[in-house]
Image (tube, rainbow, N blue to C red):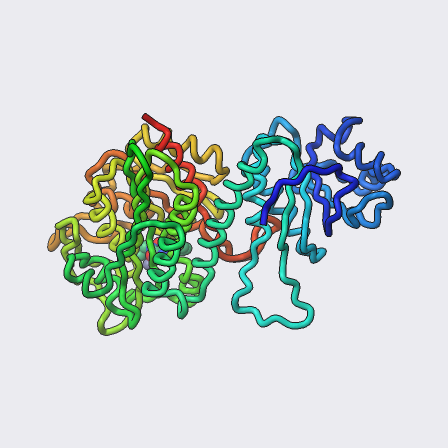
Length: 491
Ligand code: BES
Ligand code: ZN
Ligand code: ZN
């Protein structure tokens, strides 16, 4: 959908010409607005100023019917002050532009970027903004099919390669969003595994799917406990990317794949159950990362993509409070609450990941409501005891604009997980719920370089905004892909 194009602003034929502007550039006589004014023969600042368009971050301004320009409409998109521009500002600006482009039903769009630095983030934003989940909408004669083509303007040699990576990343993020947005009667463990195999086949990755018999045989008893109450039985999904040549790092990405979380026998009440089809967003992000990594083929890094997939249902067959199960990591768990199911699936998956001989594990999970309370809508809770891995993640996060905040794996809270009848139980007390969930996971991890990301908040937006359609966000995909590339380059 993205291509590089070299052309003069006034000569581009397109449904919508988008121009990204900094506040500083408005006074620049060589700036894009001045250039457009000159070409169109209209003093554009005389149009924008009365309406207080100052190219502040988040501001947009639509110009129509300018003579002397090939494009019938021009959208100005503000970036704010030059010195305050970050990756996330650029990504949001790209997304916002496409959300506006859809309002005027543009089919093709040309975008004049701010500069070559940060073009990838902006271009990923374009694809994120262009996305809508329309699979189940019935089309009629007024249906608009969405943006089909985006040309990014520029003559820099690096542009086509940068757009290629952005296209792969943006498409992978949108693949994750499709998985997250799919209704739970269509996306359940078996069909999620089917999608994983499709991705593996398309990208040349190895794949191994454990069905319910194989899960039982292998001893993934905690995953089985979570999934057995549903007519849709669980799956353990494992894809592998192996690079050509030397392997410098072996890493595992593990994602919670609860395709619907009713709470199980500790059933959720109405409002809290709605949208729990998004409880597989961690697994969705891991599969999105597999899609992108399989396409980008980074050197030096072997990556295992592991998704324990289960539907947490209430039934006479489902696990109950007071049940005790032995996990794959050979410790027993007393079920305190069947709604704390994500950590159970992940415990088996983390134990399995370590068997692959990896030096680094990142898990992503919509794990706790407590994390949403703590950090709000946009921020992921990041837990790790490894400052070294934190450094690697920080660098990746910096370049993707995804928002993280470190929370403590506080040792003193760990005893809340002690049980008198099993090696541990799956819930602590109310306060610090995101931390006790993370401490539960830590009990199954033996390697140092492990990080847990609680993405309960940023993985899913209940309503749309000026940068996002409602639903899955694809949070985590960009960070995982960037981290894999980064580790592959390390000695
Ligand atoms: N899937 C939920 C967590 C969640 C809540 C994700 C809100 C997204 C939005 C998880 O399985 C859960 O139910 N956690 C419980 C844990 C509790 C029983 C210890 C919670 O957070 O209330
Ligand atoms: Zn739950
Ligand atoms: Zn859950």
